[in-house]
Length: 263
Image 1: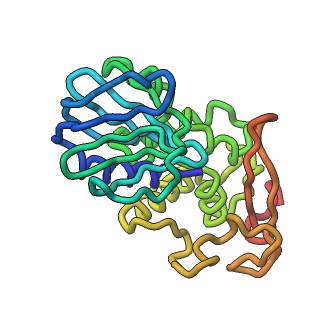
Image 2: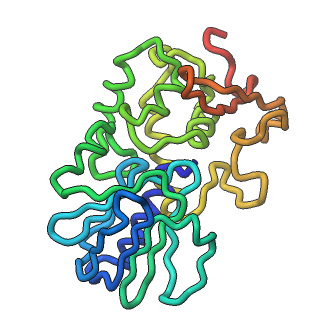
């Protein structure tokens, strides 16, 4: 699943290409917007809130999209060849210089500008946003002290931007077992600030790595490495589906580098 850094990079790229430009054509390939035409409207701003992407168009509209599991936005020159199948396209926005195509987007909806808070107002402080507030994030995490930290950090209502990969990697780097009750995590503020640091670094270098390596198979310490050797100590990496019933997520950890809570 795309994580907060991916969405922020996407917002930055779309903004650089479309901001201030009038749309020469729009094609919304979802039933609710099939007849909508925003041709002539100017793209005002592109911004990310957690994993949500908001494109402000004209004086009153906001295009809200969410990448979910498989979504992505591609920028091409007019007439350029699409890099994903046409049947996966959900939105096509055209200007004289660029074509932005949103593929396999999990959410596509057009909102009145004043209604943005109905889709992002529930989110906690964004690790990559101007609204970041560590104290608010820690307060929300502390509200359910017995909740496993792996679940708490993934809950976008507490803080926005962490997905499965960063959860596993940040807890590994912090030496914390994901099943540890949130209230029992030593220096929780440091864990959260480390997540922010790693996310910000990867936005700037335009690549996802937590090890510093760009070699294939060595970009993460434990994520995606179930049953393989931990890159730090050589122990067998464990993986389990953790979380509330129906919302379990694959989580990875090293039993040696992240000893069980209480040990």
